[in-house]
Image (cartoon, rainbow, N blue to C red; front, side, top):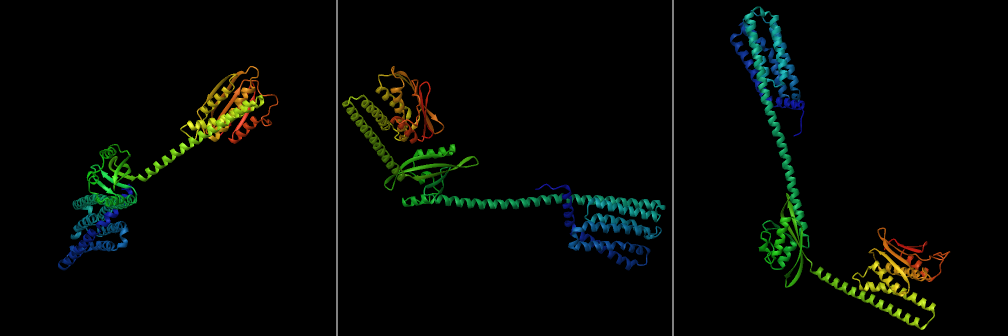
Length: 548
């Protein structure tokens, strides 16, 4: 219930107090009016000439107030202003008390009716009019003041015994009226709070019933969508509770069961009754999912319609209130997929064997070319011709070495550059076995495809061969360093340097027309890389390939 301010609550109570008291006010005012009129008629007919009767009729001044109050109660449009109208009507009663008291003769035998009439008006106001308690106190005080002023003006105080006796009764009745009003309002206040609480609870209950109904409808809608979704699955779906009873089976599994001659409607059965062929390992697996709340995936082979099929099962926990209440088992027939995978594996193995055979034959063919070049070189003793043959042999060997690595490697797509360069360096150093050159190598493990490894091997061959041939004239003694490292996120950098005599004066890589320099520039461009050669305390060549 929303918090309501005291002022708003009092206003709401007054409206409730008035509206709930209208029937009793109608009855009370009607009975009072009828009794007064009946009493006046009877007395008039029996004691019409008595002074007391004539005095009594003066009290008829209160009749207009009673009639007006009744009229207001029967007019519904005026009910919002009942409190204000009743206050005005009772202010008129104050004027009536004052008028009757001032015009009364204290020596008359009917004067004793005056204080009794005043008491009836006061007690009647507290009994019949359901207005705010403090308004009643103020009106009562004004009525008492009107009575006292009238008594002073008509000099009833000259008869102290009569004056104080009458005043005592009037004050006593006024006090009694206070208690009556307080009790009425207190009882109605409690009734109002109880009724308000009941009304609020009733509204809450209505809202709760509506929300619960909407939630139930949403739950039914969700369950319907859930069942429709599971029925649309091509896989076999079955749901178990903690006692291994079957809660739900999708239509796909029902169709399979029906075709196999089993009972299609197995929802009310137990796991062991519906699937007597299930293995103990599968049952233990389902129980483990109940205990751990983790998804489990398993594979198994079963015989179905005279042949073995390969099944994959997924056990999915269905958690409610942090507890696994049910387990959904989704079974998929992967027999065709397995056959396809086996076929692809056989094709892949065949392809791998063929690729290895191709690399082996390419390597052998290149070896034949190298042998032919060697035979031709031995027939011609010309040193220049011998040098050219050797250079060509080294270039061919660097290419053959790639196919050798791919043939022997388990990975037919990538070549380990560090191993490849080590092998290449061994071949070149053995070719120049008469040189006393120390090799220092620092290689990181980097994999590259053949399109990158082959040009890099040829570049390394050219640079290392040049160091052996030209860096150390005369002594043939020095140091050659090779460093391979990663460059950025996707590339690598190779540095070949020596501490020899350096390049000749005026050397320009772009203007050189030797075959070796031409090969180096061409191969660097082929890899989308760059090459930088510096001659300072020897020669240092750096090849950068940004992307392998």
